[in-house]
Image (cartoon, rainbow, N blue to C red; front, side, top):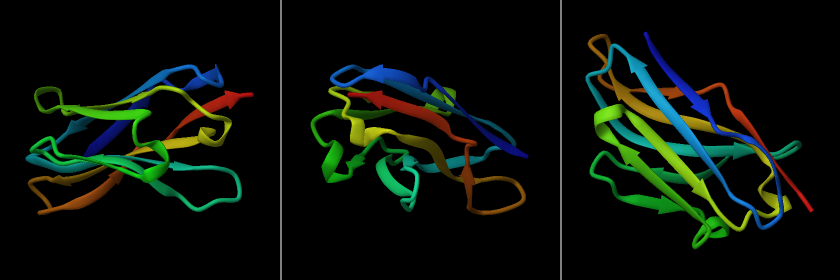
Length: 120
């Protein structure tokens, strides 16, 4: 059994900052890519940022220069530092991980989501 637990969401004014955390736990052999997705009301879930287990990051264009994804492999944890937040960043943010367990070579796991609200 694998769990992804997110923390760090909340309400912030435009121009402010928040840091999200996501920790994976359970019967983990290898964690491959970890990522943050977000979904605003009425929109599809979209990739925000991803990071490989060799710490190579990737960002969607709308957050480049404002968000930073990082990863601590020893803690099975990723972070999303969000600066210069915009009202358009308001969404539920979901943690994602591609994880190999003793039962399966690779499987997609999702956290339950954390709300980020940016007021104008």
